[in-house]
Image (cartoon, rainbow, N blue to C red; front, side, top):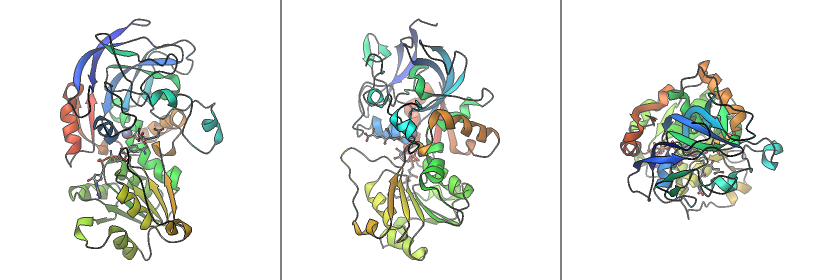
Length: 375
Ligand code: NAD
Ligand code: AHE
Ligand code: ZN
């Protein structure tokens, strides 16, 4: 297949909110600096649902969504040295070129090399897509487009992993689990003995709980409006639950009262700007730090009284939990293989690519964390 167009199945999003269509998609060979990957397993993340909903300003249609996956390199383009055909890989929506201003700064995991192309659904080389259906180009998504049996990614967007690792599990290390763990370990740098509040107990929020427990946090307070989330959350380290619907007072006040003035760290894992405000305002005066993890819709803005920051609270955000993707995703795979981090516990459903619309329905129902599709 090397050097040839591959025709394979992919789920195409033609329009916002319209069911995805399983199509025979033509996938062009990788050009210089590109890698064609056979995707074996992909999970769905709420960010896929968000873009599909039409609320993402970077959402383009028709496109192939998906960014939490694992697979095997099918072929590589000219000049690609770090992976070869047969390597087991995880596509990384957050690239790491190791050469740009961002990568060299030592201050961020964001990479600037290809972001200008991935935000508009094309490849860097020729600003074109490698996907087409009956001659019509289909946009890429997040530089990954994993809802396809084959995809083409930039070489800086692919992490080579232990070939022994089960791809049907480690696909989750493409997004949600690292995001939550890293929000705690890299972005907030939670210390032992801290009090932590987590808003939203989906996969990302539970991974925050897992990370906080590992960091030695004393109280890990989970906040969710869906009571079904509570029982499971205990297994991930949540020590106390609050349902905002059970309280008359604003949730930030409830938390301040529970914690003698506020928490040391809070994490917003929902994507709701009024909860982002509550998450900041439930932090302790003088030092409390709030990390925004959730992705809010186009046009939404955050607000608080500046006095909240003047009096020492800190507002931060995180992308992919601050992990440097190509360097650190393989390390997270090793941690899973050594049983230092969970993955299996986040997988509540398994389906096939053909059943992807059902998988999105499950994602919107309350009992699904991650649904892994066999591609
Ligand atoms: P999810 O839908 O599984 O989890 C969200 C949880 O929030 C659910 O349990 C829901 O019941 C709860 N919730 C909804 N509204 C609430 C409210 N008003 N008060 C309290 N709880 C409420 O989603 P997920 O896959 O865990 O992702 C969470 C968010 O993180 C999404 O916005 C996603 O787009 C974003 N995300 C960001 C990054 C990043 O790098 N920054 C990475 C992955 C996901
Ligand atoms: N396209 C959206 C922003 C989406 C967003 O914030 N994405 C997160 C990852 S979510 C993964 O599930 C992120 O890492 N952003 C950093 C980046 O460079 O995209 C919008 O609002 O424009
Ligand atoms: Zn995601």
